Image 1 (cartoon, protein in one colour):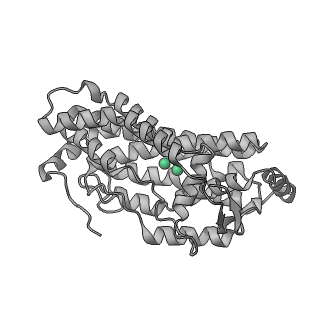
Image 2: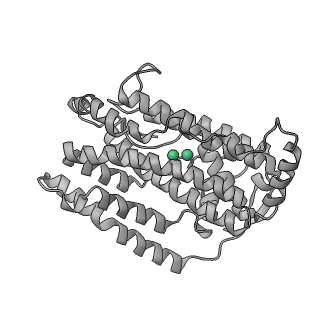
Image 3: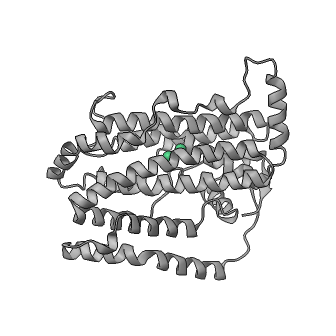
Length: 339
Ligand SMILES: [Fe+2]
Ligand SMILES: [Fe+2]
């Protein structure tokens, strides 16, 4: 597999060094102090309390009403969160921002560690919840996590932080949307507690989105040409989701199947993808950028026109779509689910 690497012109590393003070004031503020953060335990039965078993029983009763297709989406979301080591490693592939020592005191180093520490609560909470629910085959779920972390991901950001920050802005918003939609489903099936969990995680993702999109605001100001070219490049490659190499030891197309269920339930859809793109075009004022190179103007044109194009293609694909066969998921004991 060929991968392009180190695509940022080397002298541009200076931009990230010179933005250190700015990032301290404008990016790190989007982190929450640990003492003010929720922890998974806040939402889980308390193992030290006399009522522990009763609380577990209640949790299991509520979770009984969640249908199989929702469970598949929840498990997929949880596995995506659990592959966090990959995402922290990905951040550190980028020139100019990587945490050089594992305890670097640059704003970028502080950010990536604290961001990962916040994210770590997401997988923890969903994992414990699903474990206690008794509804999923935990061994299969755990195997999927182990495979996924072992495989890594093909993010295609070329060690280039301009590409990396476009990707992260997009991706955090995508998770904000999908956890939010999962909350709506959980509520619909009467599990208000789970709905609250998903909403709480979504709120973290939103904060992270704001941080990454703010970094891009600044990069668009400092180097609009490189920024719009980065946006264009990532959109042409298509933003692949972090868990696209998901595998459970059985289903070679597990990610495709999981995404099809997420699409059908409206948890994360092609329409969401187009909406995120449009949102970012607007947020970064891409239409109004001036003083771009020829290439930059082409990139500007491409990203500004892309969302309606994606919607048209999707509409046509829907019209031509044949009914899909049901698929079994090992996560739910090989019961079958409609795609
Ligand atoms: Fe997360
Ligand atoms: Fe996130």
